[in-house]
Length: 87
Image (cartoon, rainbow, N blue to C red; front, side, top):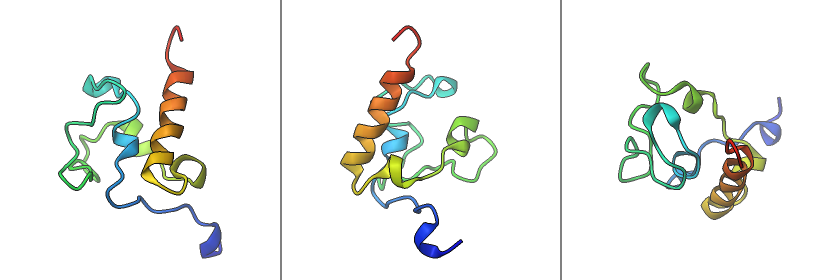
């Protein structure tokens, strides 16, 4: 796959995917930063077996990440609202 078509890498200092969605296995509410984020908004469990499966399965994409952390947060908040049970 040409480099221009490959999925983006995580944006440094973003953490949107660890803030916007709820993570039921960690009792993390939507919009609350995950307790496993460090001061630089990086996951301290990345690559570890105790990292939740929902996190390991989430991959950066142009659609999800957009051009900025603000765009990523907005997209993920909308997805969270659209997939909320009973919502």
